[in-house]
Figure 1: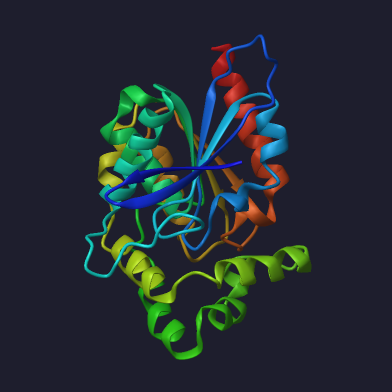
Figure 2: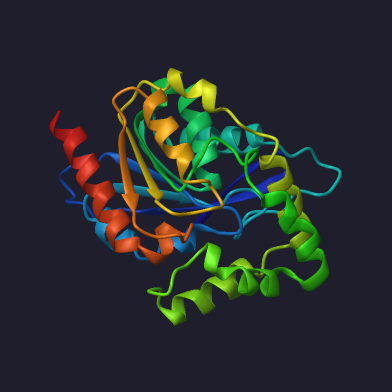
Length: 267
């Protein structure tokens, strides 16, 4: 069921899924989706996760059922961090297992750095410390020229490999391509101003890093440096050039997350 809260005059949509045993107080897993995504992109993860955890998903501002900021309204990565913390306060959750995919992982990394007391464990999927070292700025003129859906279709090889379900790929193009192009341009270009690799040494909680081993959007070589900087982190590669591992390799990724979280619970 969709819920919402208001911050900065914007509606922020969120969802809570909990199919754990009624007599057990479950831990909370907080999912943050990628740019151009929304909470629905976790659809194949929820049945497995929600049997073991209280799962909270939110639509980042400007995405899904959340309000798109007006052009005159300020928009930064910090706004997304503050939105997520405000949501946790709104639903009364003090500590979480935090999961971020791609741009959602940028938010997750900054939440962990700024609010370490709120994060029990961190899991990052296809999420480098910002987009500054990427070729993402070249996307914007192409999107303006041919439209978001055509751009995604033309560059789908960066996101999915040939093993992907054609139905999933078509759904992704339709869903992601339905975002507001002007806001997506604003979102992507802002994320391209961030590179907080050097800050990662300050992440002290158990951390899982899952990456596409051959990708170009996030640059696969960045994940090894992340692993070195975050002491005790675990690095797992998915053997693909497709950036969208949470979609194309959902079963493998969610199993990896479940194993990681179970290990933290037993420590």
